[in-house]
Length: 291
Image (cartoon, rainbow, N blue to C red; front, side, top):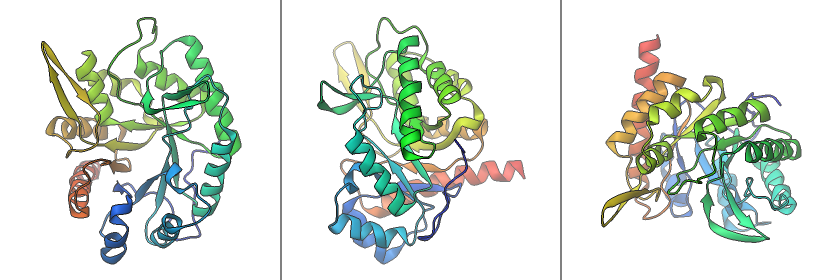
């Protein structure tokens, strides 16, 4: 499967090595009116599976001005349920219509027995789970006719029978399934704080060539008697510690397209644009040092 970015006849094609933002319905009109200087936009694929209506109309108009990435949250690629072929069919139609430069899913499961849960649940990191994921990712890529990226998720509990560190699991998956990696730096930080591992260990384990996109977001700290837990809520600005980890990631992997995620308590578009500009500044610093 080729790792080259898809080109587009609809407008700007490949994702530039700049920061982008998530496209949300609340920002459709102001984005079209102001066309802020962000490098690209990401959508949640499932929000555009309908046959028509305003979301698809807006997306057609916006797609003419910005490169696009599709990010799935509902395929449940890690589940033992059979892959949802209706879901894959809708995703393939969306890809054919909008020609996104990148398509991604999560290293997670969210369904069992045909019932879907409203969460991205972590997998047990075992040899059996790894073989299962390699086959599932290969099947998805064959159906879509293109490479996908797999994103690491935040976790709050760990499986006692896991035998492989998550960072080695993800690296091996990328190598053996031929997929790329969407490296969520915020998720690494959240999980590292929750479980007590060194986030730099995670960064050093991921193959340089596999990382094609980076995510940044905010989290919430939930405190309880005797401790605290970080929750990946996507409702805050990127915190200083995550910005620092992002700098480490850019130093290791080089500049990569970077997304600012913000899903709840959505602020004005200008706030997201400002966060993207901070990421752009870090990318430009790395470019300047390399020149």
